Length: 136
Image (tube, rainbow, N blue to C red; front, side):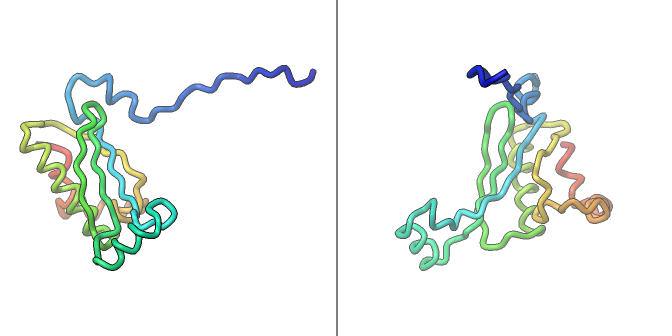
């Protein structure tokens, strides 16, 4: 048996697939942060401009899975405080448009979103820091 030139077709993986199947908007929201100060991507001119002007280097993205509605924000620091503030502001934006009900958040659970430490997340929920995010 040699190489026959055919490969077994892989099934595509779409973690937010069910968001498109939902009838109501905002059933699934993807949240991420990116360090945009990347010289290889931006090029020297833009990279120098961001550094010299002291512009924020982190871009926060809140993406609603069904409608693809996005909220963007920028910050100078990557930390839990900014993560909670960004999530709260984005959720307030959704609620202002009359969107009610529970929202499932999909993140990479980096430290800016509470990390993978369940005790830290439990403490945040007990302080009611995260509770306004789920229900309207």
